[in-house]
Length: 99
Image 1 (cartoon, helix red, strand yellow):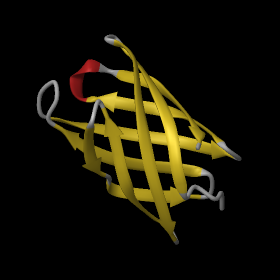
Image 2: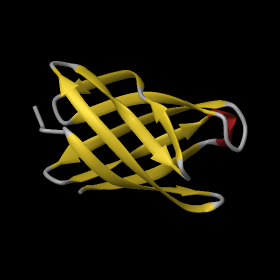
Image 3: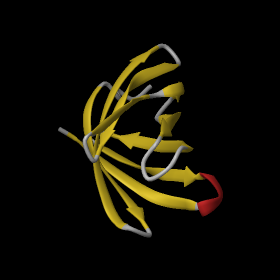
Image 4: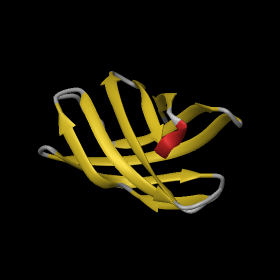
């Protein structure tokens, strides 16, 4: 199982350009908890799961309007790659590096 704990600088390639954020993760067994801060807004991770080096979680955001982001990523050392599914708007690439 990969060590995923800590703070990660994330970039989501959205249609509005690169969206920078900070993902704070804490894994306990196969449960993933933490927060994701983007544009000054901090939201709690929900339904977080860890399966080896694969992560999945959801966050509910209210900006630019209320929606649920469905996220998945793979961790390799201090790097993370994944996708963020944004409701009916499709999926966007996400990368992260551990701080």
